[in-house]
Length: 102
Image 1 (tube, helix red, strand yellow):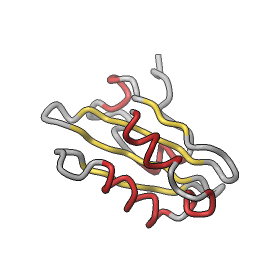
Image 2 (tube, rainbow, N blue to C red):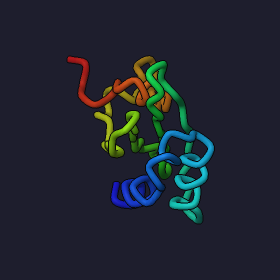
Image 3 (cartoon, one colour):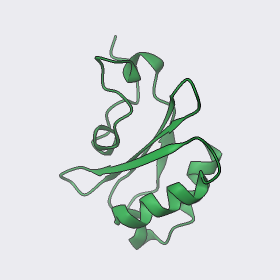
Image 4 (cartoon, rainbow, N blue to C red):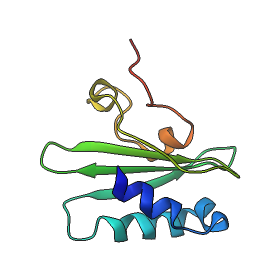
């Protein structure tokens, strides 16, 4: 989590809502690891980040709301399982996946 938090908070505030710059910063932070990164946006302009890490495909999520600071979390395992939300940047941009559904 620290690696993603540092990458996103290290961006200038205006760049935090540019999905291309967010993706570049995230990929740079996880360079040399088996992590796969993606970004998505929400209708309100929030940017979501999903990083799938390691052989077990663990998920790391982030949301950057307009004018706000990045929020980074590890989604509950039940949320990212097949048939559920998954490790989806667009869903994280909307604020989904922060807690278990049950």
